[in-house]
Image 1 (cartoon, one colour):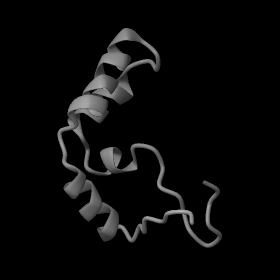
Image 2 (image 1 turned 30 degrees about the horizontal axis):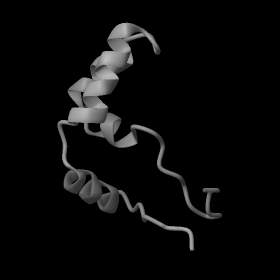
Image 3 (image 1 turned 135 degrees about the horizontal axis):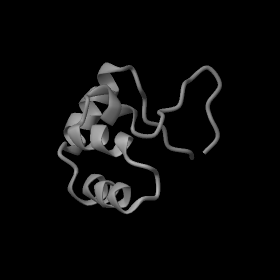
Image 4 (image 1 turned 90 degrees about the horizontal axis):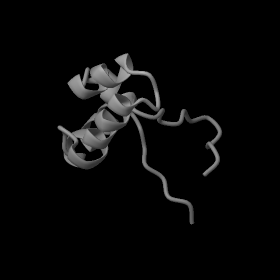
Length: 70
């Protein structure tokens, strides 16, 4: 989806960095594509420490809006 003029897109893992997620902090220390990096990514993908509800609240607090193309 293209960016909407006048809005800033959410950047990948912005929430994770903002809340100092311990898994994200470890992930940032590893070389992208390495075995350890991929293992940590799987934790994020399959067993995130935070809920969708927490993420949604954070998005709202930061002024993000969720849009859906028609």
